[in-house]
Image 1 (cartoon, helix red, strand yellow):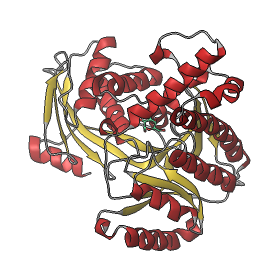
Image 2 (tube, rainbow, N blue to C red):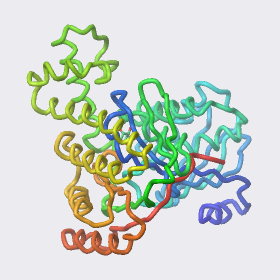
Image 3 (spheres, rainbow, N blue to C red):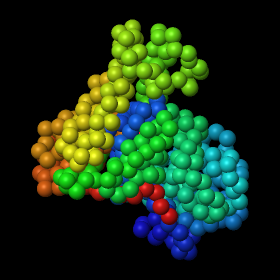
Image 4 (cartoon, helix red, strand yellow):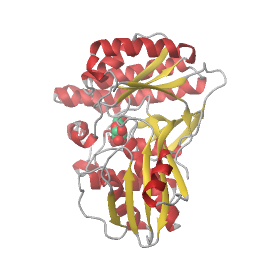
Amino acid sequence: MVCQERFFEIYKRVPERLAFCPYRICPIGAHSDHNLGKITGLAIDKGIHIAYNVKTNGVVELCSLQFGKRAQWHVREVPKHKQNDWADYLRGATIKLAEKYPLHCGLSGVIEGSLPIGGLSSSAAVVLVFLKALCDVNDVHPTPLELIMMSVGAENDYVGVSSGKLDQSCEMYSQKDHLLYLDTLNDEYELIPTSPLMKPYKIAIFFSGVERTLAGSKFNMRVDELRSAAYALAAYAGIEYGKFNETNMRDIPRSVYDEYRDRLPRNWQLRAEHWFTEFDRVQQGAEAWRRGDIEEFGRLSFESGHSSIYNWETGSPELKKLYEILTTTDGVYGGRFSGAGFKGCCMALVDPAFVDHIRQRVGDEYLKAFPELRGKYSVHICDSADGVRL
Ligand code: GLA
């Protein structure tokens, strides 16, 4: 691994340890988790490695092959506020872990991501892989759910992104050749095996060539719009509600939405429409996967993408173009923007027999529309994978 070589160059020693966390895709279930909906997900065989050694003086010293600046802090003296660089996620994660477990050791580490950033949840992956490493050097053993919640807490409280736990759960629980079907209300999940009857598939990732961070996008505003819709619906229907931030669309029965939806401001109505229809699609998708019906599963993923564009109103021009090309390319079962949809990439489930054709057609059409992205646009063909591991 390049991170191991780089570690050797910097520290003149071989790193003793290596951890890996995969990226994730969410074919159906987008923009659902922050309001306690259901999701589907798969981890892929690309992700983030950290090569590391223990530091007994408690200092964390990190360098990333993707970002220039090195970062350093003490496990018990993390800056209280974010520093506005890539390592903020990891400072936040250190605080969350230290709140629950005694930390004595730090680590020196080099981090390496295998794909461009945006849409595959590299932020959750880097936090989880770092937390695994930090737990390892301190010999502490949080449960998988504790690690998920610490990682979400780092994003919500330290970085300031109102994300849910979709990303972390996929990267934690996934198993190769299984679909994760998770209810973010109560963390119940099922790993639905790929049926022997299912047609073969590969996971294709199409990078638009434009990277992004959620902190600078409209991500939080969309979440607020949906929550506002939930709050208003509760009030119209006379449902008892608590604090605004503790109200979720999951608290609102479908019948209440149907009865009062027309009273909502148009934007809020659209966000709610996405949420409720996505909830249905996730359940239908899980059943399609169980039957081995990848064509139906793919069709639902395309529908999810459509709703993200027209109801959730997300998607840069580049991502919308990619989505549109995918819907008209032979051999693509289905797909959508991967992740929040503000730049980054699209994912698709594809028939392996069509991979060459798909590469050719999607690349030709996309670069015809965005010639300036030649050299930045890229395609990666992946398989499903297990979750985070040392
Ligand atoms: C990002 C967030 C997730 C989820 C998705 C959209 O990846 O981190 O929590 O909200 O966007 O589905």
